[in-house]
Image 1 (tube, helix red, strand yellow):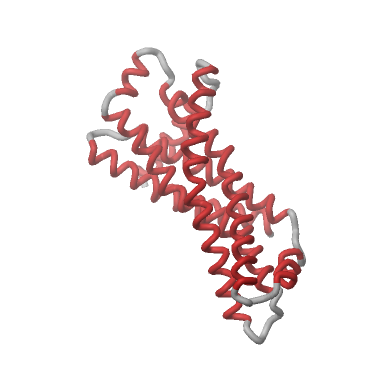
Image 2 (cartoon, rainbow, N blue to C red):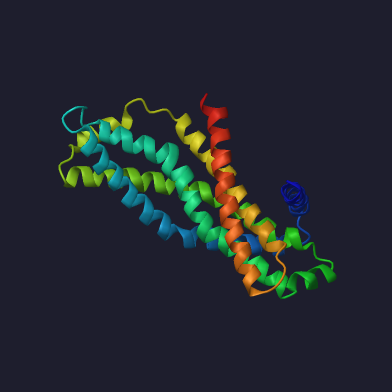
Length: 246
């Protein structure tokens, strides 16, 4: 319990040191541009692949479950609701925590054990803000775009596989997509995604920043970053869902 309270306190102290005005605006925006590419552009492939296959799988599974019992347009409705409410805003960030989170933790952790962070601090650079702030802001900015892309590709792949395999007609699928649509569902999904992005990037940066030891400890920090990020995402998902949908 004492260790947990220690880490919670140090995490918020780390956030306070991170979320401050950059010392050099030009350097900050250059780092932000780099992080947007690393976190966003380089994650686009895995996001697109997962979304397309999951949209198709959900459509096939739904057709199997409702066969002969429920109208065919339920396939489009189910794919839409699943992709918008849960898969895209929750599962995609969980998967990205393994890619993005471990990368952030290992990068900053390597800088810590190789004394590069100590050198920055000796030169008067606010190391926490310099290293973590561009990553946090980049994640918060780019994750919603990745999730929207996942929604579109997932629903689109569901439509394609439904039509190609005669699960239902395209007109039925489109009707299911449109029926009882509430734009608030998208707002809810993007709010969740933004919070999850902040959790993944800040928790990963925290574990990397306080790494001590050598290469083994860097690997352990990466693992902890992913595990704690996923746990906090699940907790935050429950809290946000309770607040926004009830």
